[in-house]
Length: 257
Image (tube, rainbow, N blue to C red; front, side):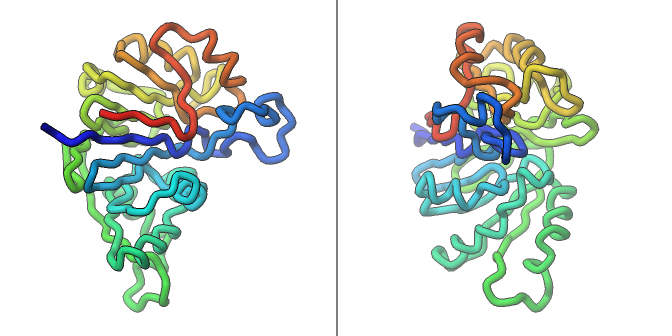
């Protein structure tokens, strides 16, 4: 029997997080901890393998908050800053584990990391820089440790990015279009986590109405919206108006698959 995989929501917020700096809206001033959202990321763990999907600006805070003691790999959806900016802090795991951390992404993402964190890839490295082992992935299933990941290619405006299916859990963030061939990979998921940025339409993300349409098309047993901005509204209020089987994700939420 396959070992249980645990998935923890490290962050369910959009690029600015929630609360937004200097904002005085009701969401940013909410006392409900579910309205406090770090940048989008999840932790995928089996008994022997630990993988973080996306290391945004809150990566260090997330590792401390959720007491992550082991990291085998970071897997990237795409190269935007809110998904890569915290990568430097993997050097703590380099030190503790005395090894490089494997970094998985499509070729375009790996090239962006080489530019953004150029000091980690120079021939003569300054002491203490992160030690990263870059591994290219394509749109086909691959394995990290004992966990299989199936990429789901979605469009983030004009940028192709990856979501990932892990067993019967599918994680899609930063999307506003999914082609039918990729949608077929998602169908049959028991749990779907999908981005729903705000109420108003957006050029590169699903808004709430669009995310609901995709969720109803997939018809998973449970759907959770993530990559949420303060413009979506209060967690408690929005969730009350959602159809059955659809909820908002929140930081610290845990699933097993």
